[in-house]
Amino acid sequence: MFLRKKNFITIFMIALAVVLTNLYVFASDDVNWTEADKTNDRWQQWCEQWETIKYDWTQLSLTPGKNESELNFAWYSLEKESSPKVRISKSSDMSNAKEFRGSQSRAVTGYKSNKVTITNLEKNSTYYYSYGTDRKWSDPIIYKTQSVDKFRFILVGDPQIGASLKNIASGEFEEQGQDKATRNDTFNWNNTLNKALQKSPNASFILSVGDQIQSRNKKVDREASLNYTGNEIEYSGFLSPTILKSLPIATSLGNHDAISGNYSYHFNNPNTSSLGSTAGGGDYYFRYGNSIFLMLNTNNTNVEEHEQFLEEVLNDNKDAKWRIVVVHQDIYGSGIHSNEPSIVNLRDELVPILECHKIDVVFTGHDHAYSRSKILKDGELKSNTYISDDKFKYYLEQEVNPNGILYMTSNSASGSKYYPNVSRKQSYIAYRWQENVPTFSTVSIDDESLSISTYRTDTMEKIDQTYTIIKSSDKSN
Image (cartoon, rainbow, N blue to C red; front, side):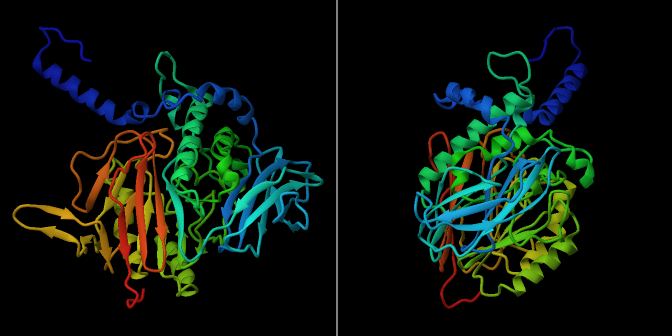
């Protein structure tokens, strides 16, 4: 890699090595990515489909409702269209359909954002829905509700559709640019979701730890965001998988989502709060069975607002056995972001609040590398499954009635960008992994346990042991 000449003096070689090493660190996101055409043989067909998908800004998004009996819809329509509605029926011919009316708001220039909520869904049931404006309706789409007492969801990290734009594909000479990068990353995003659904066909929803897309406007005021369309091709890619028409996705606001108002136009999040707000939106939460999911927008660094949100919500949901927080920033991660001052500040200021409210698990992203912490309290190991003697040290596969919080950081679900782990594993990390392959996790919850399994998409092998937290029936939360 270096141009070596015998007459180079040693000091110049050292300086050159230092410069190139630093360049590699800062350019790591340009080097480590997954080339979609190398993953499977559907690439050429996808390239043809992409020419239509990329121009469609009206992709539907499904998000969980405030509880398992509701479902939220959002989509763009042309500015001249009005009266957004959703019809739902238990018959594929849409007979005896019930109609729900929604609301419209201004979105990017030329479009409106439509939002509808449907209610009174029954568990373990098959429905068909159709959505539209005025008198235009989509074809019926199937939607299946799942069990509530024992359920599973899919966890994904940083799709960041479009982030591979600075890379040069094999056999090419120029950077991909936004169009090719979004095409590449969307193909991989589809592949990951398909693999995840094969592993967990009865999943109730998907949970994303943030950074759905890459591009963001630099002006953060609302009026400026109305004229920003630079990430709409990326939202078209992110929302294009067929799976997302039948499986709701709860998204955390990443730093690439938070300052763009476009995020708030594309997603109809439940129980939204003005606390923790940025241009993209604020904190929100939803219930599913015995669990509460608290989505904190930590791009807003006002920790007092997040504390107020947690206090208000949890006071009204004291019966939730599992308390799960999702934030984008990796509070206890092991990638290159994990030692940044902003992350350390969250560790110092937010963690005591999470512990005060007896949070069980915190799911994070941002670092595009997988890690699982030890059970932590006050930043210290509180696990009673740590075995140590003169011959060996290891962690068992489950934790019973832990006195602390598990922090898990997800790797990239699309392979649009990978970061390396820091060279020295932090003392709070139980296990970490980075082999530049997209991953996903399945999380299973019942009244006694919460289990996490994480898989790589190329071989579908686990990258970590299945890790389980158990709460004995005689111990209250």
